[in-house]
Length: 186
Image (tube, rainbow, N blue to C red):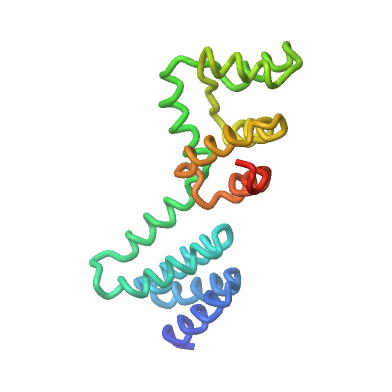
């Protein structure tokens, strides 16, 4: 099988989201022609597709439009793939390093206050009016939103979700939190 036949076959498998099979074919294509941009990018996108199925497809179509007009399309695709591999938790770490400079209490300390008072509402009102609660992990944010909704603070929960939407774009764990909010009562 020549390189073009391999690339055609791998592309069909990729578009069918059969990333494992496509990756094997792209690997064979790279063995035959190590300089093939299509085989190299195809392999990267297959790897990306294991975790980000739809995004890999979008980047593939983007690659098809730029591969003949951009000087180094491989580098562009590598950068896009790298950006997608940055997890929400990594983004949280960067954001929280900034937030930690402000006065506030860590979320774990806030949880201790709740436990001491044995009342979320009282602890929440004390904390909100006297300081900031510093949430440094995605899991803490999710827990906080759940506690807010469990205690009837739907508007506050919605405000937190909306103000942090830019940090969690398309994060399914965060998007499911919207289902905790009652429809038509905000």
